[in-house]
Length: 339
Image (cartoon, rainbow, N blue to C red; front, side, top):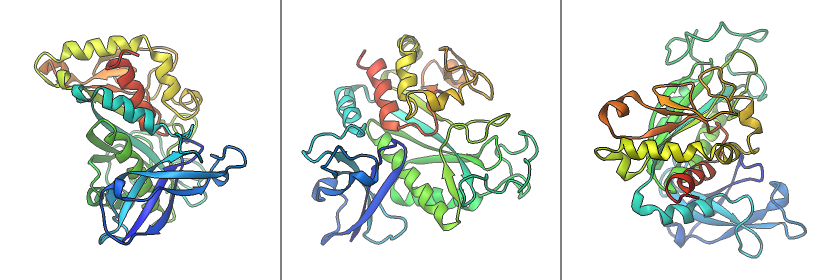
């Protein structure tokens, strides 16, 4: 029974993995051994002690090898067994445990762009020049408007097989840009599932000689960026009268804009600054705003939620290359733990 250990590397956005044979099949991460890898090759080494430990934290069915094989999400520990500085999961897990009675749910919309094998030229774009302007590509059909659907479909099926709560997909506003959604997931499950879904996507794209970019503004100019819109609710928001709890959470978030921006991409806000300009369905990175059905706001309350008086709200600020552990952790710290 093979297992694929996967952890996040020193960049905070790349995934690394390796394979191990197990003597008995299991879906319980606690049954699996702690393993190690060479941290000097992933930008995670802390001096001479380059060994980094990987500790299994979540198991999924392996859609590539199938049978009793599994994919294993692992967290990283240093050579003394302490949480590695690049490990954002542990603090997220601890905070999710603290507020588990509030039942925080998340749904994340992961946008990404397909590039050809060089990683420099968007997949299916003309060799010299640009495709026609944005407009006809969003949710489109037809080979003149859509590129890479086989990858999208294979990814969807693979996620379902793995046990990831993939909820939907669509072609996005820029050609060769796509989105899929994962959720609703409760607590730490959101980060685990989104990271593994990203790995599955990159692995499937390999089969087509395509490179997946999670860069938030892969093509400069009059082209849409890519985000990771994060939909949020607690139990009280999902019940009758929940809109009051939604408004109160948004009010708390309005006072922590800078802290959130700092956690919403791997570079403390630099990546997102290229995307959050106030154009192309984004709000300015410098200013917090919220509104009903407003796609140019930091936080959007869906029209249906406003009409029903309960439901969820959407934070449109997280970047497509954000770490969902860091994002969901910052959100519960603000709205559940008042930190």
